Length: 480
Ligand code: SF4
Image (cartoon, rainbow, N blue to C red; front, side):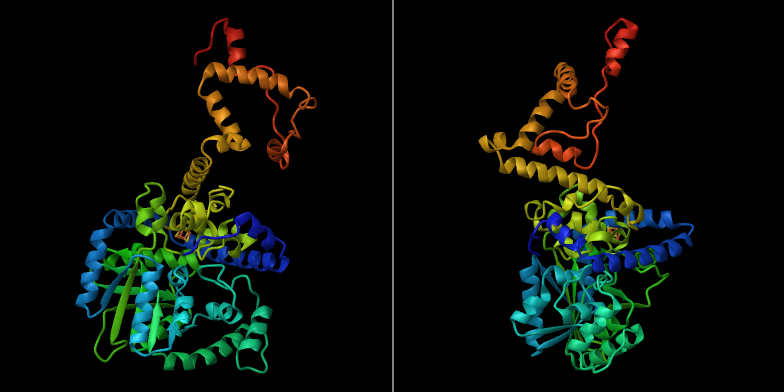
């Protein structure tokens, strides 16, 4: 996963200028949000389910090594093969090696964000292998040379009329309306042939069960079921954090995930397979376990909760920032609030330092997250890391020349001493006089300070502080 560039504010500005995109995003996120709220309200024990989901995930992360080893043994016992990939290059090499080993030049693929993270399609293309996306939305963006902007609805930024244009241009059809049924039928006819001819299927994994070696994919269109059952060889790519200890744990997550993601009580298709079975489905199964920065995230006590994510996308749909800018502004395969905390941890804070600021910290994401990831807490934690990273980068004389760093250093000195703080208050009261003649200060001078009042007024300091009032009232020094 390469580091995003340009910065979030630069890309957001471009996205916000696109009124069609904003209209599409607003409509789509509001619709999914309302559907989710309805089905979540049906469950009286929703909060208990969230808490249980969080607790299971937290315990998994604490014993991740044991669960992964147990998973490897179970998959192997069931006739599958497990591969460990340290990073994107290694995972791509493994997958391309298996595909080439079977002489295949085409694979049928189920939507997988993890495969987007490692840029699998591009890596396969470089080796002469074509990856056919079989999820309707993924197919749309693949045909258009576009990129996904949502976990579940990758083409959320496209409307029906735009999709019709893309199909007319790239599929073998002469006439087509923008009726969703006609659009889906055109895609179905195009894909059917691919399912039947593909010799290798590639999927992601929503969960894998350590005790049985079962791998699970949930989806809505049936294309996942086709990809995981029709080709004679199946490769599943999975981030190491997706393991669950027991089959019974699915009871919790298969309630949390569909309600939080598509606003459904259950997913239309839930495919579970355990190794291989003679005469039934793929006769060769490979599970690729991907690290790609995850063990580094695990080391961070606050940041590690990010790995609890089950990619439901509920946080995207409620985010006031994402629902206006869309996913491309994040310059990462992981958009929205979860992307703002996951990407900087996976690629390094230096490569994504604007993302922790792509939030108003309103907390809506935390409220809906089915596994209770405290996204605002991680955002603030990462902002601290950005500041420390910048300080380390600009140490010595360069730091002293940086106005923001110098201002922060002065503030730190003032706040660390009561006497200095009181002196600064008296000075600021004198200094603000010309600016606060009519009450609140609506304009601060200077490039740095004027930014503060560009969007809001600054309350003027009172003529007397609480402490001063207390001393005068009491006739003694206030120590409280
Ligand atoms: S952070 Fe929570 S709400 Fe957001 S995608 Fe992950 S699990 Fe869903």
